[in-house]
Image (cartoon, rainbow, N blue to C red; front, side, top):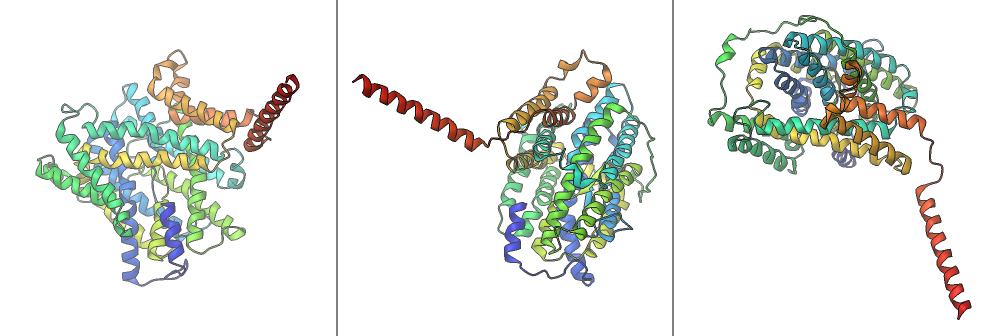
Length: 479
């Protein structure tokens, strides 16, 4: 996405509508629809995955409705800016993949204790509500956070978010957890159709097709699944006509082991939001330094925290700003924050009708897996990209190697921690928590490398040359 943004910036030197312009109804509606298409899969997919992995069954359509409605409310707050809450820019708010690993871990903790689907949701939303205050606090000191959450730490955590999710995607490609026909050829065929179509569409020269590649791929997969007899919409008639948001519908529960990984991720989310809003400011031809810029960053990060708190209250997972919408701004030349109000309205209206969630729930697991394999792989690659921006000297390479190793290690061999107290085991079984704690701890205790790697390498070469010269002199002397 970064390359797309840079390319479009070099082409579109002038914006059609700047930040404070008010486009008419049709231009605003058309631009808003493109933002919705670019982000729709990102908004609903985490709920589909959590619902499938944790066995939430009949609750899924309602949860999808809440995800869409909360995304609409969050987008309105970010664009409109209410008091000091919100960036006051065209940035869409939605459920983040960054929290998915920790949310699944929280659900597994409750499920392992014999909890019901309602207990699982009560705990997920309870700890999310409490953890959101972490980001609200950090919004006041965001300029100091970079000293602790460095690119080495952030990149490591993002890699550890993406890699465990790839296992979830591959399981869906096979047919889903516990599927009787796991690995059947028709499952692989469905996933392959979606995977190939997304790849081909993503290589299109038309930027709008690239933005909608995942949506088009999933739609194609659903059509093929329909003709294969894999879809059953008979239950849609039992769904209510309208979804009514009910605060903490499933209750409110708290678990410390589930809270800590989410709290860490809210710190990372604050840094990611800072990056997203900086890119947004650049594309929107707004300042990227000075008091106006910093005020927007603080308001945007505060908006992230408040919106995540609202999300938990109304039964949805933590949310954050979506970076892909920066690409839509660059493509359309529309940076008006008033377009965000149209985006918010579309998302909210979609969420009102649970039939939308009911249809999406019928999406076969292989269809979803074919798309999420790419998306989750992209998350891991994004972590590698962040690391590439850091100075990977011997110290930082050691931090990354140990932290990634520990994170992947506990996710593949969780029994290695079975001798620890239950609470500590549940905390450290999360690859994100284990990797983040390791990376932050090592960053704080290992001394900084003051000699540049190239200088050190040059010294080694020079020493080698000196040794060779001395040897040659000795040989001449002997002769």
